[in-house]
Length: 140
Picture 1 (cartoon, one colour):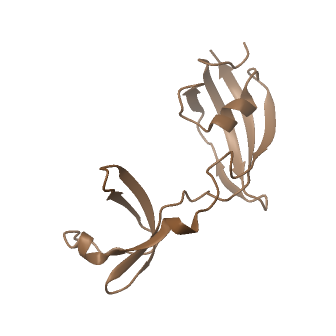
Picture 2: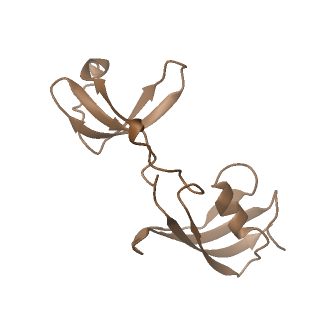
């Protein structure tokens, strides 16, 4: 059976950055249904029509993956917004913010000073060209 919209797919994959460094290698099979929006659309397109047992390597440009890096998405927020947080906020930490529209925004802490916290709302892989090596285990 070949992969199509609605297929239940089990696969292993390795993700590499522009320099060939491994960012992720699945140790357990990854499962999803094609067309439900659980994986990148360009990833789904790249594995379309593959069958169990097939392997493929493909590269996604930033626009196809997690988008270009947006410098405007790096900003400072007041530490007063986190007065009720008991643990100290530190660089590298992930915070969840609520936008004026009520949406949740995941940000990464870059820097902390006495009055503000510098955060980055870009996905960690934004702006990167990514290479996937995929092995299809099963297609149902």
